[in-house]
Image (cartoon, rainbow, N blue to C red; front, side, top):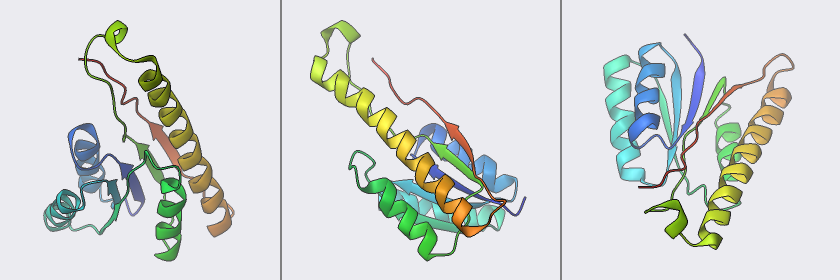
Length: 146
């Protein structure tokens, strides 16, 4: 594949499985999540198994500055992101009607703001790096109630 996939929420679940799929297809990886220890273990596993490179960027995407920090990290490493998989997120436990309204508003704001800001930074960064290079975005909903 020879491309680079940046995957948020890569430390578990769907994000981890998509990282494996991209690596199996030969894509290099930028793995983003809060748990740096788990990310490093996953990076080592995927590098060894699939002979790809994997850069780890620990980030908490609930922080408004996180997308800009991720962009600086990729730009500083001269990485052109070809695929953006936005799988990071959080949810409220319990039935929807039993959750706090402010929590629900925060979840919606986080999902919208983070997804839009990540895509904007990476798309404009891609345009700055190569005039014909625009990443493909794969936004996944991480909102859930149990």
